[in-house]
Length: 360
Image 1 (tube, rainbow, N blue to C red):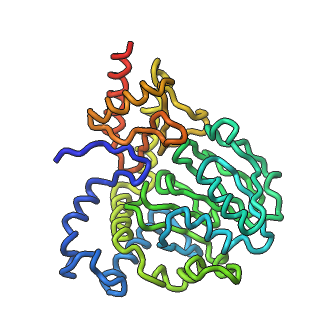
Image 2 (cartoon, one colour):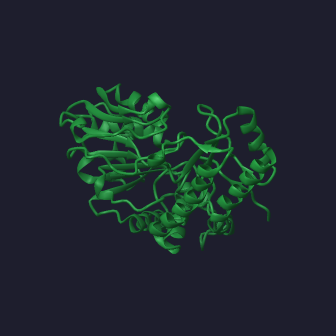
Image 3 (tube, rainbow, N blue to C red):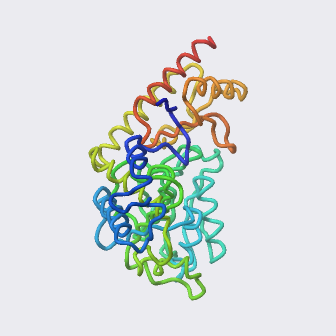
């Protein structure tokens, strides 16, 4: 079976081992004599699936007992609205670091509830860096601080956390979660859409400190209240059953292959290989400040839009697909999540070298 190397930012490649296991169980899961897609979410079989997914995620992320793990729907975009409904309730003010398109969407939702204070922004240079942050920026008259840990479109990452003066720190980790070891205790809320490092689109992971649950505004819609889902262990209504099942398989795959620390080691190797080539290439170049580079999303350019398009086709003809950059920035982007094997990045570098040689 021939498969391409898929560098899509999301939905992204999944581990082949997981795909094959899902394939083998697709028609008949265990002793159920039916597919997970057909299974009642109230059945014992499915309860075991969702429990295993949560327990394995807790294990590989070392999630403390005072945090709830929620399996929700609506993507990170719905979290932009859920957060202010639930947490922007005392001061009606939130501190934001604006590092790209997704930060801007979160800011827009918060403005519907109160003051969205942008303490720093990198928009002046098309979000190609992470702004310098000082603890004095984070005044105590705010309900929380919001950051986007990794910026999928622009390829930047918070390589150190800001000192937020003890305020609750909330992070959109959609394109960052499980890529390297973090301390969950550093955050009040972590949320992530699944379709990058977790599994297929459809489920959104929310990891929330329990003391923050139950404080929603009175007019909060039922489905946007964290307490609704926490009280029912993500079973208030029908959850995205199949997506959770596949996510659980991915969590098991990570655990089996050395955990998040092992993922981080390989990710550092992959990113190092690609960035080293870009730093020494006479044709290709990266677009992000070196101190703020993402390990997951690597944007690069030739400096000529026509040549960028030519390279994208050249690479696709050689089994390297979805390298076109986001429409807002152009160029190319290689998303090299956990499931992208080292061999995929090695082949990408080989193809880039060959293309460069042809253009000399």
